[in-house]
Amino acid sequence: DIQMTQSPSSLSASVGDRVTITCRASQILSIYLNWYQQKPGRAPKLLIYGASNLQSGVPSRFTGSGSGTDFALTISTLQPEDFATYYCQQSYSSPPTFGQGTKLEIK
Amino acid sequence: EVQLVESGGGLIKPGGSLTLSCAASGFTVTNAWMTWVRQAPGKGLEWIGRFKSKTDGGTIDYAAPVKGRFSISRDDSKNTLYLQMKSLKTEDTAVYYCTTEVVGDEPGDWYFDLWGRGTLVTVSS
Image (tube, rainbow over all chains, first blue to last red; front, side, top):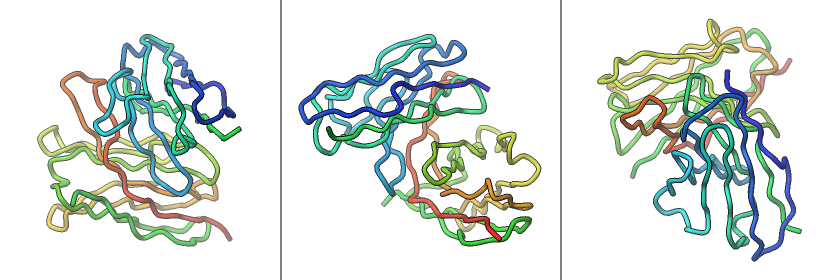
């Protein structure tokens, strides 16, 4: 199985900050990497698919980048509603696997 | 409205069995790739298995930790996906989500799209 490692595991930031979460895969994924946001008690929500494609309805302050084994999710200007846990997920091969999550907290 | 609604969770003793349901509305499960994903309390997301659409062969795949114990099925007349769980272990305690996959033209070109709200399964004596 492909192992996905996110960093950091947790992050404290302030409204208005720019933050970047990284995701590293144990094998080359090409661009087959997706990002999800999950808030407490809620199901995950797709943000980015195919490494850099913004899902419809997702604010443009979310940007995905990378290819191969190294990927990043950047939030350009943090808003109060962005404080959540973020997961990367590879769709390159089965079984699909997720990173361990990055919890973004308010400083 | 397009939605998924899971049900059937609860408290079950180790070694027991439980069947979860995922009722779909606004689309036809026959034509969708349907997946179960679980999340243990305070932990990350884990893929359990998927049921491919009828046009893509209708095959079913399982994750190694549940293969042989869990079974995914579909009732097209009820537009519902099921997850039958047997020989449950304490480590199966989790919120179980039903989700759809949007599939593109390339093998890796897919993602989880529509999610239900989940149903909690607690395995404890």
